[in-house]
Image (cartoon, rainbow, N blue to C red; front, side, top):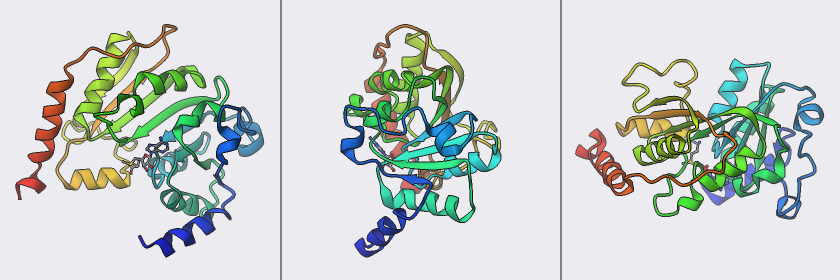
Length: 252
Ligand SMILES: C[S@@+](CC[C@H](N)C(=O)[O-])C[C@H]1O[C@@H](n2cnc3c(N)ncnc32)[C@H](O)[C@@H]1O
């Protein structure tokens, strides 16, 4: 994408009523002005709210919002040119149950109040092999999500990364979290129903390369502090590299 194209999208982003772009000083170390008010004041109802973290172009947010008109959906990402796609679609299609927020997920607890969110989707995040503190399913982020997720709230993780899937599964097991489902090949196993077969931009690319897509659903709350898992990190790092080398696309 040319920088001219990006600038055009950034300018158009300013016109979308469904796209919020908080300034850093509005979220850094203090509650954002709309914290606790997304339902009644912005969506205009009390329907449950689902978040998509690192939503990119917002495919899950949009598709889920179309399937569940009685629920609200918020996609979050830092990249404005990607959010533009989802925000433009929601605007043109007059979708009343979709919002996007351009911000860093690091500021997430400034945005939402206790119990304000009922479910989270994390779609194809960077597995952050070398930086566990940046991992969106690591203990640091999970402790933050716990602060605003309803007590029985669910986290859904969809990824092409066996490393991230197995790390998150080990974390959930070792912390005694309620694991609702763990599937290491949703298409090969026939598990991909109309929800799980919604395809994001990155997912379509990974499928083309022949990578298997995994799914994990769990409840992060159990009233105890979370600990990082002890797991075979090295083994999964090697498996991850092998998996990527051995895709049909790489084998030619
Ligand atoms: C690999 S892409 C996946 C995008 C989309 N979910 C998909 O599947 O097509 C990861 C996305 O997460 C966003 N992201 C990563 N770390 C973030 C952070 N700390 N705060 C906000 N967005 C972040 C990136 O901007 C990027 O759009």
